[in-house]
Image 1 (tube, rainbow, N blue to C red):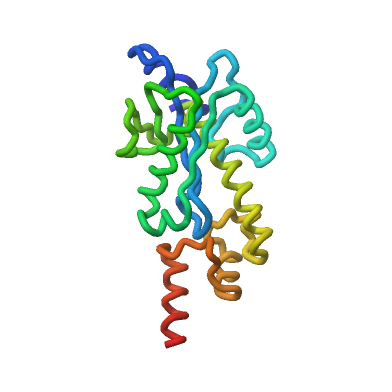
Image 2: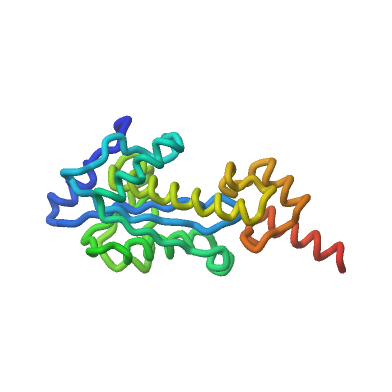
Length: 211
């Protein structure tokens, strides 16, 4: 694997006869709160923004700049699964629902989809290919990772303004010490995932005490 993502997977798909290849990635499996967000991106090979990479390897400022360039040059769609859906379905299934919604939102349907990870959403009714560590290997998936990350971070900043004290504008809902301390001190919000261990345990303790 090279140091930067490239078009190897996209080119291989084109060589097999596909004409419209989308990269798909999701963000938000690990946090204790907020939705899981996915993005689907079909790049224009003649207008690929320079510097695309796994969103985790980019600064916030660089992600924001690339987000604007991706939106301006590619066919982009996003999808999300709510906290309620995460709790009802489990996080893996909910992330796949978000991915399917993102693909369905593209202006023109792709005929091949590159999915970050090792599993393909069962409801995605088109040719698919799972790419392990795809956000670091495929430019299309890298672009999707950037779009999903920026959008979810913006959602969490907005939620942080509604529920101050949890530090979501900084930790994006991940179980940092500050977030866990705030959970203990401030309690569980409607945006917390009740099926996740720390939140579930806290609610169970509160129920036990009250009863």
